[in-house]
Length: 363
Length: 275
Image (cartoon, rainbow over all chains, first blue to last red; front, side):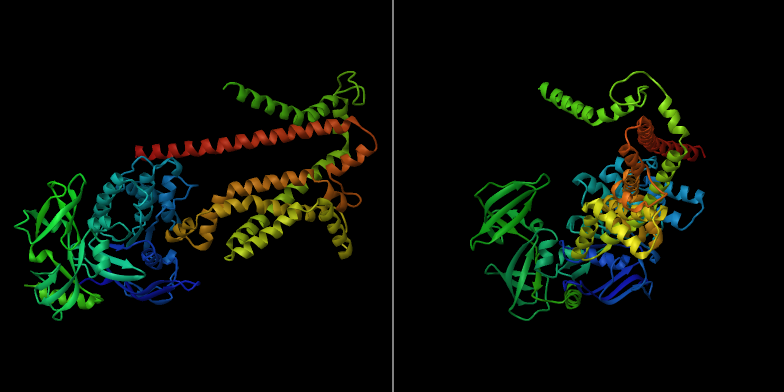
């Protein structure tokens, strides 16, 4: 494992008015990866970014950069650069001077500044925009200038604070590809703050899911999607059917009054749990062949799939994604594989969760 | 549909006529050979000749301009820092108290300010003259500058300051490269406001001029009391033209600097692409 470039140890942030924004945050950021801090607004993700950038100080805990404590280091001496949510471009400077701002401060030779700025603009696909005033640019272009202004300084870590939130859907998707590509080309560590789970899933090497000033779960997008640690994560990342259940034995779980084979274990017998079934893992079949039988309640066409809501005999709602439509009011059967069932314990800590998963999912 | 703009433009023309007629009336009679403002008897440059040979009035004009320039310069510097200081306070209550204290000075009658300065200077034993006028002009100009600069300072997005720091700027560099350029329009308009306020102030100046030193407004007042001299008209005409030139000049300077910046950039760009 490479040496972490940034480490947060036991970070707590309490504001003057007593509001606790972060509680005991521990993060390890490695060189050259794309990280996302994902959470609803007010979950403290931007505060973490501001602590790493140095705009605000942690009340408790340590910020380490390449193993050195940088709690007291002012932002202008940190080797990180930020792309701000509203871009924060300087309106009195044109595109060239905005991008050149950092290099000019470093008193680089003029020739070098010119070359690097134009290279950076090329990299964000804005060649020939050097003379434009900021007010002449569209939101997407301003976004690119903001990225160019940050990466031209060759930071060790690039912090991005919801940079895509102001863009329209199509542009946002294009930018997701571009950002990911840019990160891989430059090999710079990206820390990306977002409340959009799709964005985080699409771009990240690793995601930290946050809520209420705490990191609930960290892992690769696939891990987090397939094995959410609790109700909040399961609900926040993607869509899911979450049902109360009971762990009968290892690999045997009961919900909606029936017993199913599953791939989870390591819990007490008859422990109350929650069961997650992703809507795309539910396959539609005839009523007599299904493991479950539901009656189709509503059906929405989403373009690439149909979103079907069915209600079973006990009144539970089931969300199903299907490429084929079904008839409203019809009884349909649902099937799924044992590994489609994900079991969550109540109040399980991330470390215990990971240990248990490792033990029971290897085989 | 067509009537409304016609009425509004008619109204506009009327207002401008009312505003400008007295000035043109004054200028018109500055060419009157008759020596009064009752009937125009013939054209003459005589009043202008007397004006330009009047050593006393020329010295007063220069003094007035000097006072205006110095006082507005100092007031601009002090007022700008004042505005930055006011908006820099964390507590909203402190901010609004400071702003109110500033505004009280704006609205309190000039007579009160003039009289209080007179009392201050005499009780401190400071002689009246150039210095006392300058100090009092600086004093009443500062609140004006604060009021002109403050909106720009408040408009400044704190993220811009963060961005500057993030890109490696120290506090001083952030100040000179981001804050000052951003609020420059406010500073300039504050300067020009202070300049004009100082130029035409009468009430405050009247109290603190003392003997021997006087400004244009006080001089015109004392001359007008002794009876009308068309030399004053000539002076007013010259001042009016001067003001007009200032406004036009300011406009062209603005236009020029903008277009020059564009040209320069284009030039630089061309150079780069050639290489």
